[in-house]
Amino acid sequence: MLIDSHCHLNSFSKITREGVISSCEESCYFVDSSIDLDSSRVSLEISNKYKCVYSALGFHPFSGKSFSPTVVSDYEKLINDNKKVVAIGEIGLDYKADFSAQLQENILSAFIELAKAKGLPVIIHNRWQDTKILDVLDKFYSSYERVMFHCFSYNQDFLTKIIERGGFVSFSLNILRKKQEIIQSLKSCPLEKLILETDSPYMLLDGKASSPLDIGKTYLRAAEIKEISKEELENAVSLNIKELFPEILKG
Image (cartoon, rainbow, N blue to C red; front, side, top):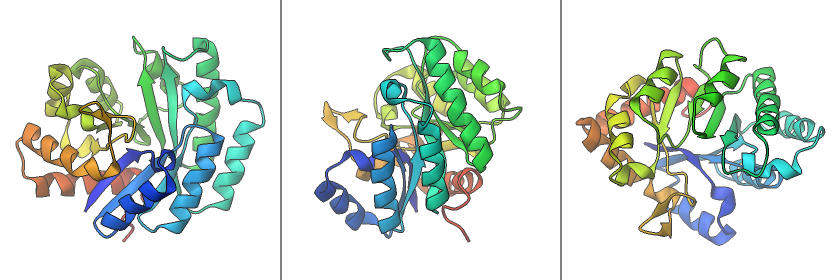
């Protein structure tokens, strides 16, 4: 069983996502991550329709303009009304966002508080030039066992800081590229903390939008880099998914 721990089915056209899901709904599970309130609602429509899809309700740093004091309560209502929500995410920090670091931190903190109140893990987006994200998370978590860093693209030193705190690290289709920093991080990532994803359609493959169907490519390449069989990798990732998102693969 392959599991795409972070994709954006809600960003695809209805026809495209129906084609994706129908072609592999017996062999894959998908965690559909959203970036704002509207995409969160679409994600819930999808996950409530398909057994193999679960929702992570997120608020990307780029969505800061639509944030208001009522947004978090809107998300809380969505969580209360839906059983397919398995995480809050993606949330985080991004130096490319057109908002101050303080505003981004305030929004991130509000959603972490929501996640903790609802007993949900968080999926972290981090595009920052230092370890500021760890400073924020450390205010809320003594252990990162309920934290997943998605689309990891940093060096082994940063990865070690996450692993030492008990966090999970998810690698994306970017491992198909030749950036040695990412490859070395994947090599050093303990199997018991490793998760995989596509981050489709935003992660480009050969200059084109990717698909959740590309998750098999992530598994194959990760198995090669880790020098283990694809079956061993699948088993390890499944165990990690069960720990982080217990509603997926339940039983």
